[in-house]
Image 1: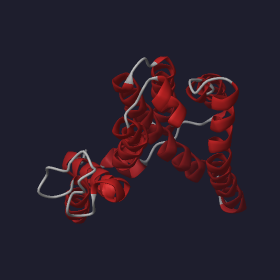
Image 2: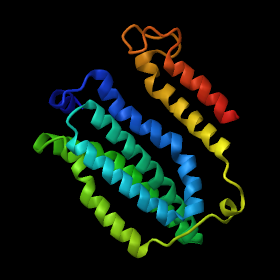
Image 3: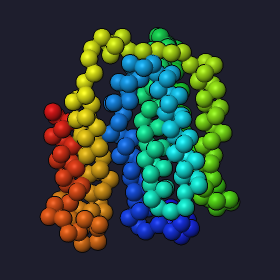
Length: 223
């Protein structure tokens, strides 16, 4: 982030949104995209997610300013929201018994390993080449994943989702609820948990957006 802030340049608030917006969209849409995977087929939504994440990576790698980079991160978040539930649901639908436990173990270990290796790899790419390669490295990986998905991932669906109607209200509430809670948890320290901090972008608001997000998110999740 410091390198990107200097290179583009980005303000501190813009740099925060580069990371925050991805997490917000990713969390807010997980339930929705999981439901779509049950209806359209998990391999279909996995392919859509890979395409969106790749498109967002291209946009981010070529970004010439803050707005383009933030929009690109939003597209990446949308792609990630399609990928995660489709992979987990596919593992659940494909394997049985002891094989299922092993498959879930591999799935979890991969995510944990990526969380550890990713920041180190990103730092090395930024230091040795350019911060743009943090996004560029996604392209060959996504291409390999797309080929592997086509060749080896079975198409599975959720039978219950096909029988029931589309719950638009529930999906909207889950998106608002998850998004509000994540916004509050991420921004509470920098904006203030209830009273807005003078240093935050919402310093003139009567109530901090983080506090509003937590309250609104909690209420809508209960609803």
